[in-house]
Image (cartoon, rainbow, N blue to C red; front, side):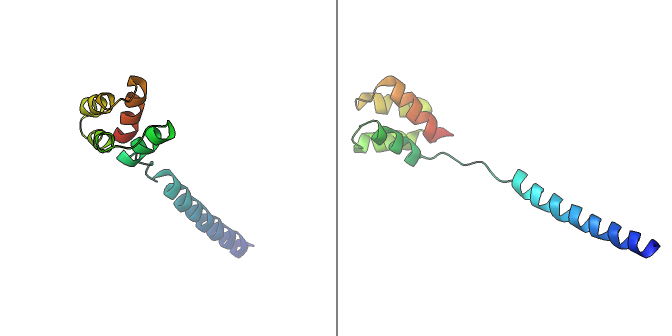
Length: 91
């Protein structure tokens, strides 16, 4: 009877370790990162043509959001769209 208890306890511990390993892998997975491409896709989805100025504006979103906003607005993007697009490029 003692052998069965020890065998069961060992199996249970192994199963628990595997479960913890799998759960730990899920927990430490990195969140998705936004990129200038997300900014460009957002603008294109709202009907904006992707000009050089708009592509550059999205690239600035990574480093300096104010430069991204200004570049996009100067290229004719509505303020609210520029803010949202730059947020996507900056995350």
